[in-house]
Image (tube, rainbow, N blue to C red; front, side, top):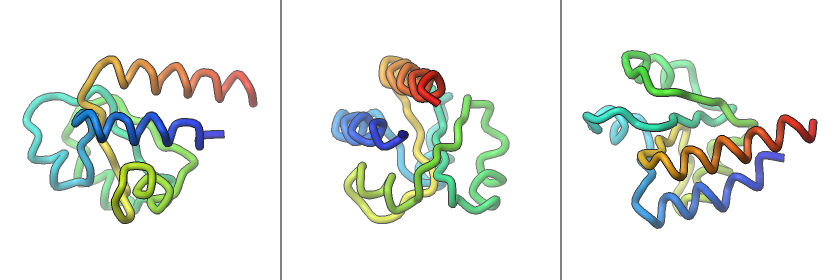
Length: 100
């Protein structure tokens, strides 16, 4: 279950390694390590970030679940800016796939 990713997202936010929302991600000029979309993010969100060549994944989590994990309201997309956090999230995603 992807809910075990939520504490990792919260930790990345507290460490200052997570960007929230289309505007802050668009304004970030460097490549990010991972874009994470909520399952209920609108197609407009993906179009707004389509020019970025960052790796991305859509989680089976809602905007509300992701927002709660990172300490704010609903969040459709977040970007991980730290390679270590991105690797940790990738490992957790691999474990989820193995368990399914």
